[in-house]
Length: 112
Length: 113
Image 1 (tube, rainbow over the protein chains, first blue to last red):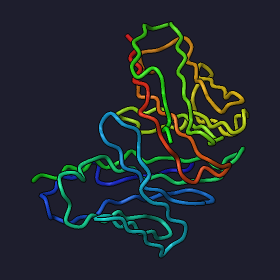
Image 2: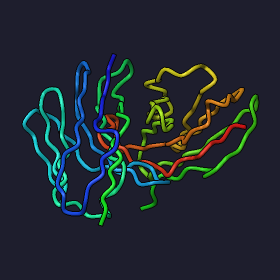
Image 3: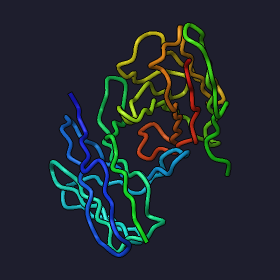
Image 4: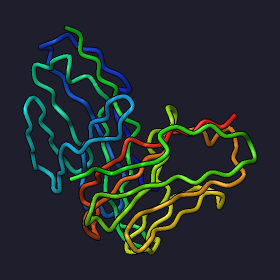
């Protein structure tokens, strides 16, 4: 069965304290891996897509990397406004087409 | 360009009732997916529609159903509501057939009493 596991469940950082979030996956026929950000009371917002091992994407203080079994979201010098839940998702081929499976997310708290 | 619109934003129902949730995708988007989000389970895939056809379905009981109209708007229905159906229901649209990037609405928060 296709599975996506994110760790840690929650992460508390001081402003400026860099860290990484992990997403490990067990799927057959991975087409792409995605990172989303979700703020309270809102739907997830797209951040990155990664397609192949070794690929990296950057956006402001965020950098996503991909290996054959996991992905990391690196947060450099975070600010309080980076506080949110970060969701990892994989796209796999279902019976009728592609479907996206999400992990449970990592709740990030950044304190000033 | 308007985003994905979900109505209603909040809903309170009692056990045994049924409910219909609505989703208007971004203009031009033909694919609509539905997800259930709960604190314990995260986002669970319900189903996905493309051009009025259900292409994929998650592991939910038959009480959960949906449909898509010719203008790409979608509805999902839950019959015989149970307490465990309390959740945030999220709709996401995508422009093409491959759903590479999902655009989410703010969801409908359903509470079953």
